[in-house]
Amino acid sequence: MLLWPGLRSAHSMSEIRTKAEKVPELKQAWITSVEPIIQLLRHRTERMTLKDVPFQTHDAAPEEVVQALERQVQADIDPNISCAHYLQKDLSSKAEYQRFLKEHCIERHYVFQIRKCDKPECCRLKRGPDVPRRPDPVLSNDNKHFKQFDKVLGQDTTDSDRPSAKNTNVTAVAEQLQGVKNSVLTGQNVRKTVTCIECTKPRCVSAQKALNFRESRTLTRQLEKYDYTCGALIAPEGDVLHGKVFVRLQLSCSSPIELAYYATTMNVRKDVCSFCAAENAQKDPALVLKYRVVLPLCQACNTAGKETLKRNPIKT
Picture 1 (cartoon, rainbow, N blue to C red):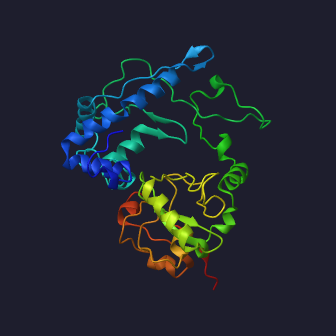
Picture 2 (cartoon, rainbow, N blue to C red):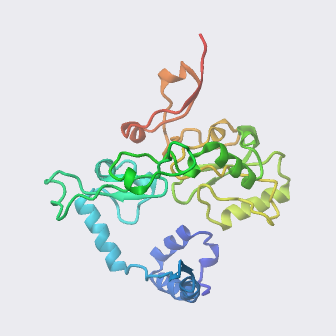
Picture 3 (tube, rainbow, N blue to C red):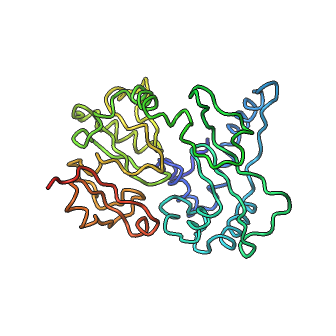
């Protein structure tokens, strides 16, 4: 690995990209340095088989192809999308992009489908017969087996029957992996926060007991050294902080900010939108009079149809 001047202070890929914008030679040097690792992973992957069919690997798209796709997205979907800014916080306010998702896309937990609409002024005419959208797995009447594919093809389905949607089992598995029950991950046990590099939402890092100076310093260094994404472990087995600090595993980038974040006494911003983490979000004054807990909602999420998260109605 090349030790580029100034690269030692970069603790994440986002910081490396920022430095590469200032030092043009850094990008190619970084690509060259990781090429042996890429080839090793490619070799090992291609040795694997599934039902006697070997895995295939492909080269990443060249930069000019990526840029051409970006220009096409701007021209055909939303001209207000900025190249290389594709995080949720960047796209939630793009009206034309959100309309495209609603009219042309089917988003599920594991599958994302893009389909042409029937409006000639929007999409080119379909050159062949209309292929039904891919159906979701649907349980049969005995709730033990799934219906055959051809029985549900062409029907409107949801992904509520997917195994990971069974909350009781998933919760038990998540609590076992994270090492503590969700009931412990409350506002009073929040010791630090960590920001997801994908959705930029703050997530709570909890501990049942207050961390001593050494533990707190170790945690701070780990959060600075490694990138965090929603649903990842903070202290896996074998880590010095394993069994001491915890994050909620039943989170994805689409999950709102936890209630514990707004309930903690730590010095954190409480005016961030619970859905996209935009700052200067407001609580609905009418709902504040009816509920004890009302989370902030920004104008963009309100316009997009997001419903304010609330809890504990006030009894009159």
